[in-house]
Image (cartoon, rainbow over the protein chains, first blue to last red):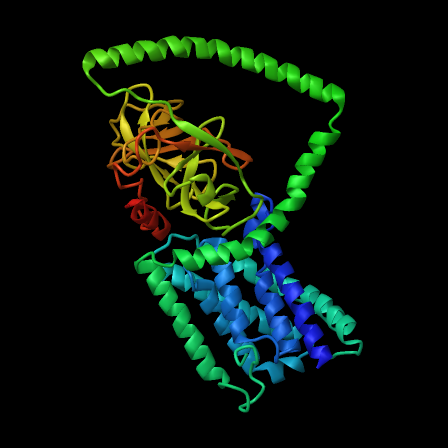
Length: 165
Length: 305
């Protein structure tokens, strides 16, 4: 139980860190390539500690992202809900995937995420460029091994036992 | 408590599917309410207060960097800067002397013509928080909010011209939209001849477009565009942009004109919040964009007492 509790603490800290990464200013040319850190972190923790992190987190964090980005309230929440639902649904299968295969799964999740955001923008008649939309998908997929590695280390530190995701 | 426990099998709380359905429904309802009416300000305010520490934390290294640079600046550099500033101030004060007499003359002429006098605008310096919002929209956050009487629709300037306007006010911070945002438009006049038009944002920080001028319009490259004050959101007479390209295509109904913003849209760190001398409640429409941006529609809504 203590291990679970500490995974909650470590996960929360890492998710707050992801929130900060989501708003750190980047130079203009690369600002469109920012990976969706919050999504990556939450997907990781949903795989690692599914009893602690889930749809309620997705909803809450989505609302925070909406407030941060000035989007419609509920836009990121809905997109995150879909992604986390799929993650939890196929959790057992994703857990045994090797890293390369997991990256492909993350790619699919990111595509779903971005498409949902894009679709809601379209329904709400907000003018948003389409071209740059795929950039976070690519960078997010590439950033996944990093998230995975850091997450694994954090897990190991927190649980004092080798955890296999 | 049951919400926290996820998908540990059918024994704990609701199953995954119904849970997704419920939360999804809430999200969709929120979006519809947020889009149709603007009654969610309290939720947003609460969330933004929760998020303020995160934003402040992100801003901290940048603020520290600027502070550190100021503190450790060499004495000679400081002296140099002081000298430059003195010169600049002398320059400005000379211009200001002329302005004072011109203003007096203007007031006299207006009095003769029976027109209303223009009072001076009140300003407050605010700092831009170093946080990025949506990369596809030109938005930024400033460190003044409700507590400093900032209101929605208020104009933002920097030393060179109009920067944007406030679209959302929170207790400690306010969110602003740049004039270059693709959803933004503001009424301008050509300073040379008083030609009225609208400058639209393009989504590109160094270009505005003027899509509503016919081929025969009297406008040239290098013309200065100043805010016209029509629509009531922006105070009149502040520089907005300089016309950079005029393309008259025979056969097309309108000329293709782009202008370069006068304000340093990307580099500004300190901005001026301007309270127009007119009561903002007198005229209710802020400068709405062509496309319907809910934030700006919201601006118009909240202006109503």
